Image 1 (cartoon, rainbow, N blue to C red):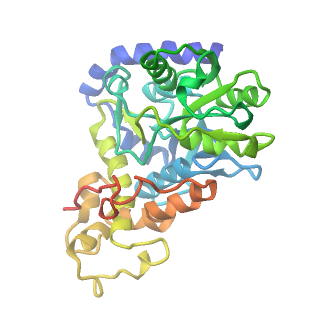
Image 2 (tube, rainbow, N blue to C red):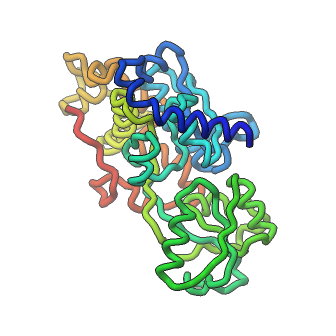
Image 3 (cartoon, one colour):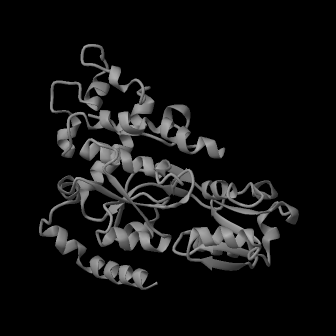
Length: 343
């Protein structure tokens, strides 16, 4: 608790100072990462599929792979990244105080977070929505049947407000039970200390696997919110935000063009005719897109060689959970993923 209070105090102080500090030309995060030789990425350690520390001591997950992608782009090595586990309430203070360089922890982009928390959001990497999980034996199939139920939520998340808005609109009352940590939330639910648990549907699906009897639980076929999740950088460092954003776009663009972790090395100047692919992979005669970002000419090639394109990242981490691609498909396939042009 003392550590959390310190982070919050430092966060409030940094909020007050951030604009003049950056205006005075303080060294940007891109240069800090290069000079340090290591990226520091804030992640979730309790969400299999997105971010967790395996029993072998290796960090794994969809968000973790994006941390490795940024390290590959900036430092030419996906392993030059330190993953720092953060609770939901700790993530924005950690970002604002400079404890981490980038936050990639299933974080929803909202107006108030964009304007009030000193954060700049990058393109969403996963479009999610809030749902509800409960025991099948309750026989509940609709939200109105939740009246009088105890509903577990995580502190410092958007789920509390969404829950309050939804129940108010439906004219029903529930009893929110707020937990500081995600792990405690699901342990308590499994011990029947609350009737229902609500969070992003991807999290519910992921955490259902960790319950004592996963098949005894059902996720209602209802979505009460839009939850666009993606990387976050500190407000005011536009150059760094550009780097992280274009790393995300690189994974989208590679999938659009059929460039994979396995075939990226086969693209050569002499056999690649598409001018956008040549610019994207640094195969043209110019300095490439990397120079404009402060990166190497072949930064995008490094990203794809390290983690693959978006579809590969998704399939490696989220498909095993049973998560469908849904709207998280390229725009060319009817989805919402759209890379800005590499020109």
